[in-house]
Length: 194
Image (cartoon, rainbow, N blue to C red; front, side, top):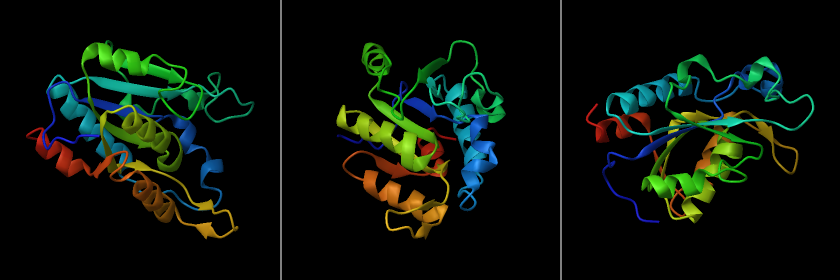
């Protein structure tokens, strides 16, 4: 994976699973989420992408699991209001945790000549991590925006409760270097001259 210090004009902003499903209290059963500013940071990135005419990809999870908060027939399936797609912006619907599985995303990106992906969204240790790992493995210059992603508290394999911040930080550590460059909203906006 080659990382360039600037963002080419066709660098794509990929917003993963920022859907109303995440507001369901079931997600926070073990404790509050981290990065309460993630939606506003993602909205700032989205506004900058739109101002500069760069491509935007909205990834939507269409769960196949009965009772899922991401069920296409439920209110949770809708995108959060901060990141509603505009006409002409690409929407990728997925049924697994990676935006590359069962979709034409990889083919479409290559056809468009897009090699730099800037990823925001949720949840860090699931769909964001799976998508970023695959993007890195496929050779994309992948930038994950740490303060524009979030997750929830979770019990580890031994049963110890880990805070959302711990889960988030471990996920970022898993991705850093080999799969993605970890960055933040201010740094990305600075690359755009914002």
